[in-house]
Length: 345
Image (tube, rainbow, N blue to C red; front, side, top):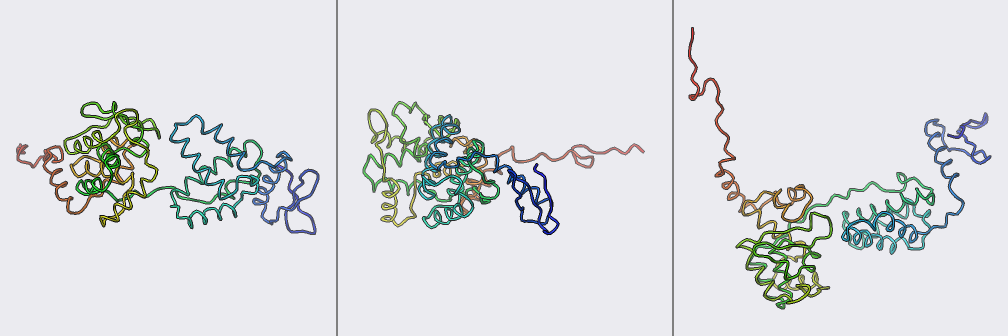
């Protein structure tokens, strides 16, 4: 810690940095200590501070992202591309401070990005800046430049009943309807669906090639109520290689179909959620639904599938009440008929 002094003719505390007396800008001694430590840290950094954001991002990907699962790598690369687009790939890393970051979040909101999405982009930015500090290329404190941001997401409530799914399928070409059918038959996400192959279907279960985390590589069971959708997908899917052709405009095409049918728009993830909700309406617990969907634990499933439509709530409660394990045995108290007391006096 550099020595902190006070000039007789001044009220601020001063500190000596590289042979120069620099004001801390405060009369508070404890705050002056923190300012002095930050000034010393900046003084110890190398004189060359020309590293730009693109270079720092590449270092972050090579060191911290390259060893992660493909889905995680893809996520970080997408977030860093958004950051480079708005902040500027050639922007010097030390010019990325609080004001540009606040402008970035405002710009992304104007573009329609949701707060959870922006939160993930800020997580990627923090990782880049943190590595740059370790490499002595970034001179600012992350606590001072990074905003406080909640990245928690609110699960969507959109899902489709089976007759609505069939209506969507009938409005699409057969090879596109097969994609929709596979989503609701297996609970697969977009990547898992378009990675599927015909040989992944074995009897009453389907192997899903998830990439986001280890739990996403899983076998999911097929039941009589979702078997017709799987049969449709297999009937109209490709005979060799990937089961489905690429569908770049899937979201747009589904929106157009839903507008034609007069129903809310659906996405690939909404179709996946439909599989989970169908399980819930059949009395399956959210924790088991989370396992079937490849979640690491049951927390997301509890948030998403604990809520059920009011018209289905009575049936689920009745189902729980009919289960013997949910009916507690009467306590064996001294006054209960099964354990009569005897007066010994």
